[in-house]
Length: 376
Image 1: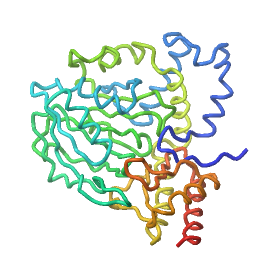
Image 2: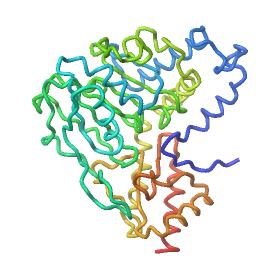
Image 3: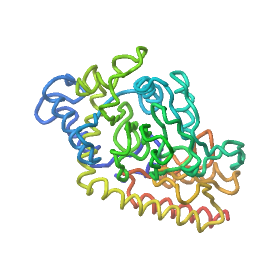
Image 4: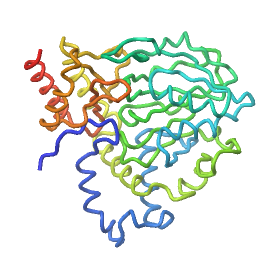
């Protein structure tokens, strides 16, 4: 059986070998007589699964010992509330600043306003027209010299890969140069975590939903510097208090056990691909192939500045919006699934996460070329 290529932004494609192994272990994990779904979250079998997953993630991302690795629930959207509940009171000011570079950082900013004095450090929300929709067009990252970060802020929040808008960057500034040396970075890395190296030592907290590059929905990864923990607001539920989750090895309450198990299999798959460095080379090749064709075409367009184009999420538009339905119908028939853009921006979007093979991107480029020849 040949599977189609799934370009969904999330829940997203998983490696075939991981799915096959999970299927083979569904009824009996390693002779335990139980499915992972049936195990006690505090029993010896799941403890082994969870501990191995954490160890492998630490190895892949080079996470130092003074950082907690937490397996939590709620997804990236819930972290928009969980982060301020844990961090806003780390300083008396209870301030936080936000870099707004797309739809997800905008959501984060709005949610955080419930918990403290929240300000915009910089934004790329320029009024523009894309396709047939008026919207804020996030196509670049403001120069760091323009960021206004308050020196007493509890943290600066940024989204390092905007899933909807296709903006990705790791060129984070030295906050000391901005007059805020004691302000830690909080990074939402949901849609590109484990796709390229990230220096954890540069962040205070990094988080991401698992359903892009790690596993099924239900699991959220949080990597947090331990000296920032222990000052959660009284309103913070105990199950979302980072310090409590850390002290209980991510098993304070029942965690998303099966999602953690699948994540652990993906971590081992990644190690077999050469780790994060190895998968980065593959991801670069896929992105170069797709952007190369889009840039050479007068039929399609991508508006994101080349310096900050996402390797994971590639939004693009047909110059003739009337052809959108035909494009998507033909793509489905060709086995190229879930290419419709997010409802807030329209157009198309190809998410080419770690598990998407180069052959899938080549098949998409072949289809783009064929559709352009027919309708251009």
